[in-house]
Image (cartoon, one colour):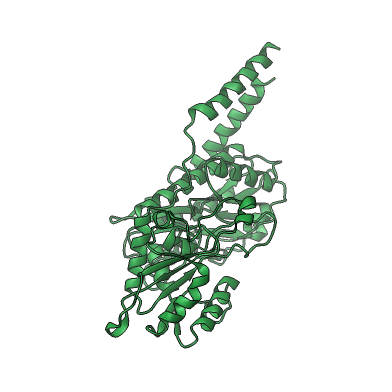
Length: 458
């Protein structure tokens, strides 16, 4: 009885510490208005016609559990998370023509007071504080946008917007608004502004890096917890659920992508998402799970032995993947390339895997490395833009080689997030163990703590 009272008191103290003593999670901050203004100015300066970018309408997902998240490029330019918005940016008029009005306009949907009773207040175009809150000198009702664009078509022959990928309809959002633009300004030539926006998005500002690091830190916390709790008998979805809890408790607005927790044969499936199998002794478990904070995504993968110790063959494959990853990380610096010509990160990892280890038939392991080594990180987990572009300071990329051998039920992927600096690189995920010995040590410490806690509760 006394032991139960002590345990209850300890639990109460722990809860009190969490509520009172632990600092509250930071809010999901947007950047200052000045940063969005600077981005818009840079973008407009490179165009010879109006730039028109649409946010999501809020009707893209009609399910009862849908939560609105803004279109990433629109958010990048405006910081606005309201549905039904758009932005028009105006460069200097061609041939010295005069244009009346502002150089940039934010269009917001008119307020719907009945809807706001259910969903909360929204900023309207007629709100006296609209300019101050948004950083736009001119904020207009969306229903005025069509007439404004038609008027501008008398001055400009080119209009820029986000066009669907060539040969594809793309997401309905892009196709729908492109068709709308063709109808509203039928004589204008529509050009794609996506490449320019995506190139800007690839190089992160200090404010963006702070949000991205927060996403990384919370994701690392979740991975460390998974290492400590991993054991045979758990279900894949239980690992994922616990990690998501840590993300959201820390302030993540959502997962950066659909969580991947694959045990045994599932570890060899790259985008395995079913998560309903039970983890068995002797399995390796690929855990590719990360959160999104303030709109910015982390992307982290670790491969764990269910039993706490890698078997000899599992360790061999793991160390080959780790060696390939280390070789690629060492090469990250300004001027390096992920893909394309020269000594790329992809080539580095391919050559390493091809020259280390063999499959069961004595052949190269390279055919078991079936994906790319890297991608950009940012507002999207696979941030858009030219992937053959030379790396520059401020870019954040993943480095994630892997080997997947279905006939041996061994899949290993190790993925970390790397910032390109002026002198080389910084490993944003450095706090999360990568080597076999470090991983096994954390797992052993977690099991010891679990056993100690269980013994203390008896």
